[in-house]
Length: 275
Image: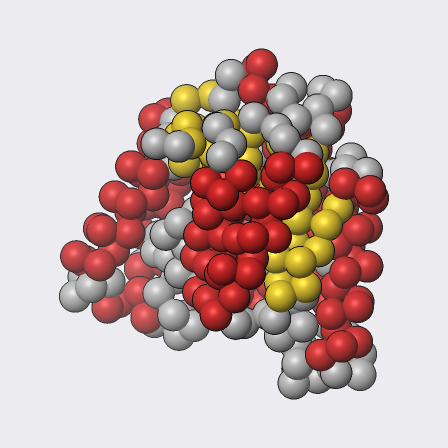
């Protein structure tokens, strides 16, 4: 019963989110842009369909990966080998989305420790933004729960200030989707029964999504490209035979977390910087 209630609630909020969000103006889809990704795969999850659509319309998209991605599976693979593998995956995914290899950059900051490298990352992004100035920037949403994501957002905004650039900023969510009703509360299938006692927390999360994500892009024509780009991130999507416990994205909430990224719409918080 509780699962059915959650599913119904999710559909209602999805419809409300789509109804309330404005479509990104067509001229903006044709603008060149920077995409700042905390880790290889965030570019695809958060705005991969938009990247592919912009590329299809002739826009030049630059992607910068902030961390080296070496922490996701350090229990099963040497960090240096994992970083090298994720870099290759990043190039392949970007190619699938229509981004040229020469337009892909890596800061190689330590995965899981970006909060201690904000100043360094800010300076690096300021240089990149200055070298290839654009009018549009896709960055992680500032309210993203993982510290690496919040730190990457801070670096991006700091880079814009240091470079003294003006432009449209579109913050994209990734882990903000990992909340009720889009996914169950916790891994226990009976955990949804406790949602009434946690109603204030749930309500605050829903309000945050509704108030922040007020712009959307129709990426339905690019869903196949987005799926293929995500599949390029094999360390995150394929369970390696030699490591049967290797965690993958589809493990999260029984795959419901991944479903959030293939609805056919990508959502953003949009503002003009400096505010």
